[in-house]
Image 1 (cartoon, one colour):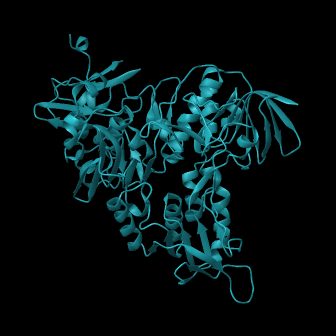
Image 2 (cartoon, each protein chain N blue to C red; image 1 turned 30 degrees about the vertical axis):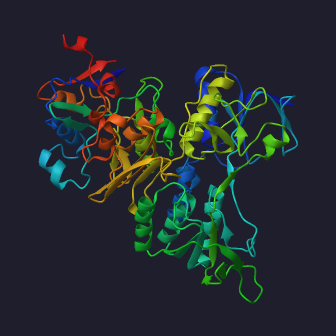
Length: 145
Length: 428
């Protein structure tokens, strides 16, 4: 299974991964609309953390033992047996935030606007996720791990 | 007599988790699930959506409608297990038939506590833990303008929110000095209470119900409740939500060891060979208290059921332990909490921070996080919960846990680097 990992020595905390993620999730695919005008205002599935010179980009790691799946009250989060990926069905999400408390990476977002969660879905089947493709410093790696 | 390899009593989080785990490792062994509820497994936290919006149980299912068929599970629904003969590996069902089993799981859950009190059997008095409860209230609600909810815990709060959405004037009567007192500290509980008041709910604390009254005509309906102080509150609907108690009868009668719940070891095995238990009925390992304890919450039921299922199927697995965990967004206040939120004595250290509408509280004992409450910005609460679960010594960085810029990066590198950072060889 492929995961997105960060090459910490190249991550400068520019947060463009967050920008490319929101753009990818936007209805219009246009930056200004995605950030300022779209009613849906998509959240980023990636989060950049920075402390002094160290920066990392964090997102869902598709854990082999996914605590979020076990905690999910609605049956919205599941681990796909074939791909090994954690998948999320929006309809079944009740926004109880159980998965947020369960996620050891703090990688699940609270989408207050929709009353549901938002999370990285590896751009659902794109060959290269948008954050990886867009990272100006090649600090993100999409690799088997 | 019908014979199955695996019999599961209870069709909610724990029972489903066990069936899924069994199927993961045993594709063919026969599984049967018995439940006295007539419907497929549904999300218990969503019964409020039926009350508030009329959503049907089919919209609230925990697994797809074809789950049982696809996994080769016989669902015996709307039936009650009457007794267990653990020695003979047999369960008697209330339709007069019996089932013999190889391994048995007791995932019978809890039932709401309804205290003995004057008028408690009147029409218009409900509990709120099953879909049927929500449906019964929804059918009655047209007759009501004012409701009293007895108990300001999580179930009570869920009921209050749904009733408010239906336009009722709601009063909550809480015995202790504040709502949600078992899972939240004073400050977070006050945040929730404030939001509740803003929504028009009357909160009465430090009071109990003396009796539920009917109109003087002698009709059997509810017309008011009387508090222990003598104060009378008019209402046409009452929800009793003072707590749940494990459904232990089956296990106790079968000679299985019970304390406050069914005693289980780390494999979720009971005192009887081939009999397992999980969920709200089981007293499983609590990693905060480092001992067996009832922690009746859905995620622990699922995890315990999963561990039980693996062991039933012959694959050794240990329950890592759970603790009281809760998350909520009632009346627009997002909260996550876990463990000991109010220290019982002054041997604990409490860190708190309130900033921009968000609130964080971390309770530490001997270097380990033993309790936490996040409100508002809750997205990083899972990072702290992991430290708590793994009993990481946080002494060196404890202050950062409530800092504004708290994140994985504030933790020692060995706690995040190996999971998030690409190994060096990839760089070459």
